[in-house]
Image (tube, rainbow, N blue to C red; front, side):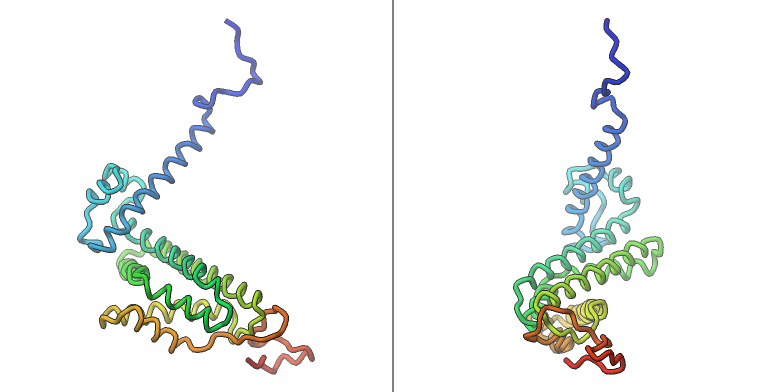
Length: 236
């Protein structure tokens, strides 16, 4: 029998690197399936009303796979809530892309956010981490990513349309989500409709930027004017 050359590639099935990649890919797919199955169950029944066996059945998986990938049901709950919040953030950015004025932009964001229950879902995860500090880092990373991507999207819109921003992008993003979380939680407790929540958000947020006919250039509070005077605020 002719021996294979030492330079000849190993068969894919026998290559440890291929095996590792395949395992990782399968693992990511299973985690995603479990998250997809768990999210609607948690939203409908809550943490205590959802059993691991229910999630496994919905994902066509074994209960042991849930504990393997997420350790506990609480960890899975928090990850579902964090992922859904980031999905909502992406949806708000997409909804606002067609806006041509600052008013349209803010309205599109508020309308999209208040039409979803993702923030209420995330608030449950926040409450849970008060008792489970081991889950707090995931929430912290999610909030930071929420603000970072929100600031990036807002700055991009302002620069593209040549608006005058009344606040720095990071401040605007953090303010928007703080207002959204507060108003939505209060509204859920009082049984307010999505339309009422949206109206209240717009009232509290007020004007975020102004349209101008100037070339697209982000103008921020405390930016030096053309004369180099750093003490004078940029007028909206």
